[in-house]
Structures are given as C-alpha cells and as structure tokens.
Image 1 (spheres, rainbow, N blue to C red):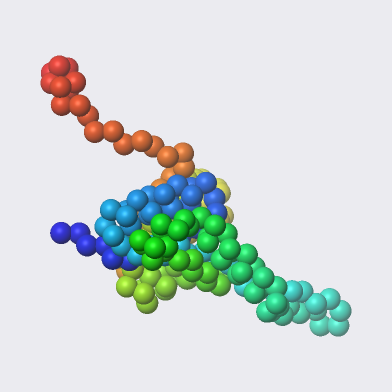
Image 2 (tube, rainbow, N blue to C red):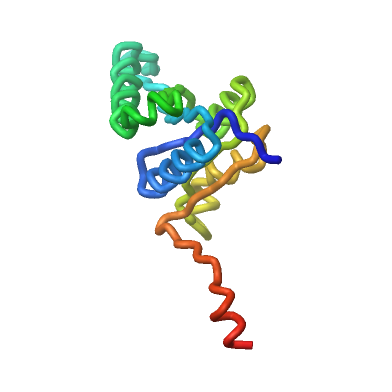
Length: 165
C-alpha cells in the first residue's frame, strides 16, 4: 500500500509549477498528507566596483527576496490547506535549486516530490539543464513531474471499447 505523509511541491511560480501545485494539493487531500510548498531563491550578491572589484552577499536584499517568495507561496494556500493539510511555505536559498530540493527532501521525511517541467529540449536543455531532471535522478523519494499544458486523463468507457471490438 502506498502511504504518503509528507508531500513537497517545488515551485518557481511558472504555469508548470502552478499545475504541479494543484496535483500536489489534490494528492495531499486524498492521502491526508502534509503539504510543503518549496521555492528556492538564488543567493543575492551585489557587485562592488572600483579597486579590486568584488562581489559580496547583501543580507538585507536576500531577506527581502526570501520574504517576497514566502508571501507569494502563502497567497497560493487557502485556509483549508493550512488547517487540513498543515500546508506551509518553505523558502530555501541556493544557487543549485535541484540540490536544495533534494537536500530538503532527504532531511524532512518527504514521501513524494511534485514539480513542474517546462519541456525544453534541444539546445535550451543542453545550455540550461533541467532542475526537474536532476531532482528525478537524485531524489530520495518518487518524483511526479507535471508538464503544462495540463493533459486530462480519461479512462476509456468499457461499452465504447466493446462496441469497437
């Protein structure tokens, strides 16, 4: 029997991740699982021009970016999500989103990761890689990827199949 207690939905706020969020929410409701919605922000670095020209971390700007992501995730969640699913936002900071997602899943007993995929191919895939692909390859649990546009799955009608036979 499949038992899901903790479902992680990774979001980059794209259409594909919005679709993944809906799948994750429905699965969490079906299995009465906790729903964690994770967004990974980049490390914010500020260039300093002059003498040596170096880059330093800007903690105030980093905090603002993380707070904005937290508010955006919180806006996705309804009161029912919070009450019934224990849904909450999780904002991580890393320049390697796939690693951050897998690391979080490994340390928090995640049973399923749900995430969107953009379906880029060819040169775009070679240049940019795929966060979803890296997560699928390295995650400690099953990963459900959702591609936008969403496809409707319909079971065949037994009578219609029999009529064609």
